[in-house]
Length: 114
Length: 111
Image 1 (cartoon, chains in turn red, blue):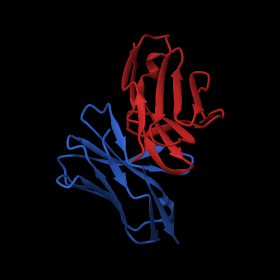
Image 2: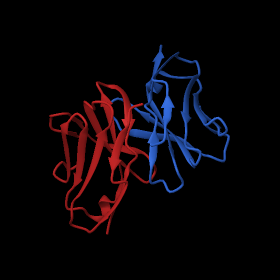
Image 3: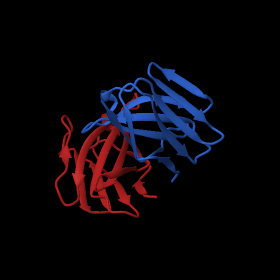
Image 4: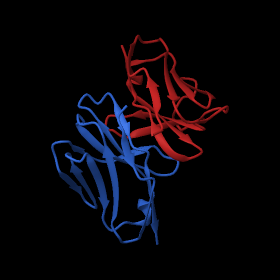
């Protein structure tokens, strides 16, 4: 079946640095990518939606200058957390869809900012 | 990665029960989850079950786990139109550092 590879699985970075998370669809064309952040009660908050070749649409309350999303090709989307702070420590997960037909999730990235 | 599978679509009549099924392959799964996604929203955690449990009930929701067959189901009693959404099952190990989601089941409730 469809596979989305998300890297890295976990990362520790220093406060003030930037971290890039990649999501690749391995065997299908991801026309739409979704980025989520998981909060302590296990609900996943939708951060942004991106269509290939277009600017991402951010949800209310998500800083687009802090969470940079690039979806330059049909198989790759990246989320860059810029100038990371400890409060950005969380679990980030991507999901990809091909023309709205089903969703395939990455396995997530655990970010710890120290 | 691990395989988590769901059927893509389910339609039920209002007032009937809905049963959404999920199968997974990872025998080391510790937690199994059901999430609900309404249009344009994130994934809301509905319920979860530990792998050493067989059943969990929470109001209209009943989760059944058959660990031998690696089969998880979510039963919604007295399904309402507000239950129309996409339902995802997911599993994780006890570290919680890796999640594996199903593709989602789109539930349509017919008035």
